[in-house]
Image (cartoon, rainbow, N blue to C red; front, side):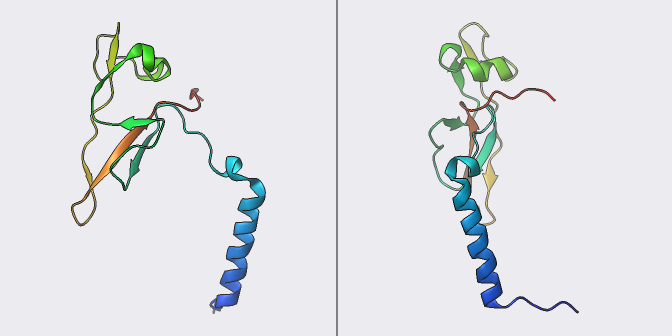
Length: 112
């Protein structure tokens, strides 16, 4: 039969994990997203470097890297504009909307 870990054992593990993460430094823990990554957040705005995932047209000149990845798959004329995909509403259990965002900066993904 497995013995339950006591509070002091859990605290020791948490302290060890915290120390390990701190020793790595913030830049090692939080990596840059891939351009085109999609996240869902529990607040009503997209963080800097991310745009709402709602089908809007974007100027190619301002978002060349993202255009290289998705092209006109979701719309746009391919000369001056391209469109982001239209995300479906994501709701919490208590019917509150979550925001979907797409990364406009970061690492350019390469196929494996």
